[in-house]
Length: 199
Image (cartoon, rainbow, N blue to C red; front, top):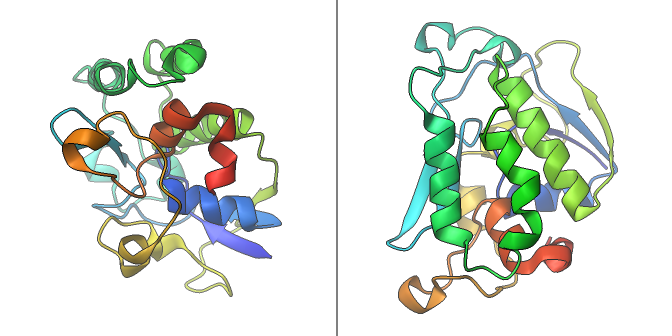
C-alpha cells in the first residue's frame, strides 16, 4: 500500500500507525503550509494538561512550497520545547534511555527549513521504533492521490478525533486520565522498545 503524507513535527500515534502499515510512503514537499496542522506542532502530556509545542515559521513564506518554508529562531523555542519535554517526561520509564538521542536535536541543531527539521525528527523516530519503509517524495503538487493523508494531519480533523489505539501507561494519567493520540514522543518515553506494538 502506497500512502501520501506530509512531513510533520514529531507526528502523533495516528501518523506513525499509517506510516507503519504502509509499504511505500510518499512525502509531499510541494504543498503550501497549512495553519493549525501538525506540520509545525505536536502535542505532549504535561503536568497541568496537554501542551502544544509549536515551531515558529516565516509568515511571509507561507504560500511558498513547504520545503522552502524557513524557521524563525528569534526566540529560543527549541530550549522551551526541550524544557517542556524534560518537565513532562523526566519521570517516565524510558526518558533516561532516550534523552541523549533527543537532546542534540533541541540543543544545537538549527536547520533553515521546517522540512529539514521534520525530516531529522522523523529519522530519529524511525531508528528508535525500528521502522523501515520505502520512502520517496512527490515530483510536483497534485490535488489528489489514491491514499492521501495530507489534509488529515490537523488536530480537529475527523480522522484524528475518531482515531483509536490501545491505551498505555502515561506519566500524568492519574491527573488527566489517558490522553489518546499524543505525539510519538509520549509513546516513546512511556513505552520505549515496546512502542511499535501500539501502532
